[in-house]
Length: 84
Figure 1 (cartoon, helix red, strand yellow):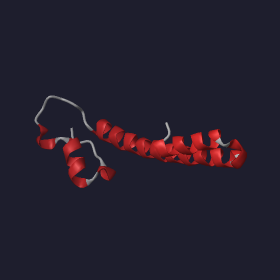
Figure 2 (cartoon, one colour; figure 1 turned 135 degrees about the vertical axis):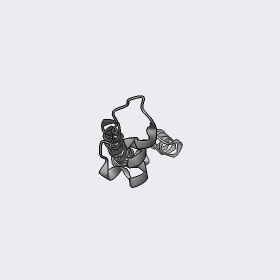
Figure 3 (cartoon, helix red, strand yellow; figure 1 turned 90 degrees about the vertical axis):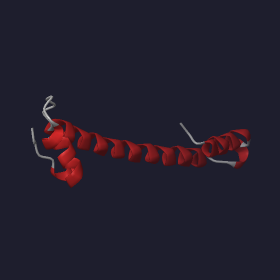
Figure 4 (cartoon, helix red, strand yellow; figure 1 turned 90 degrees about the horizontal axis):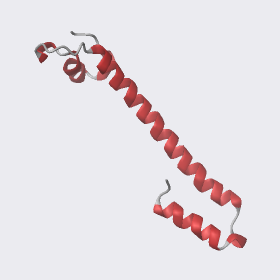
């Protein structure tokens, strides 16, 4: 997926190829690729944090007074310990 602005730019290049270069098209694609790669890295970081929270909890039906997930969220997810 491209933004509407990027699509407009690509169509402009396609409509008038004599006044544009492949470098322009590639630049648009490279910019979007970098955005997607940054988003993937962000999502992978989020996945690791959620996995740590998930792994720290035993998931039993006991009271959430000592829930390791809630404790970790209060402290920040960096130092997750198993409280179950």
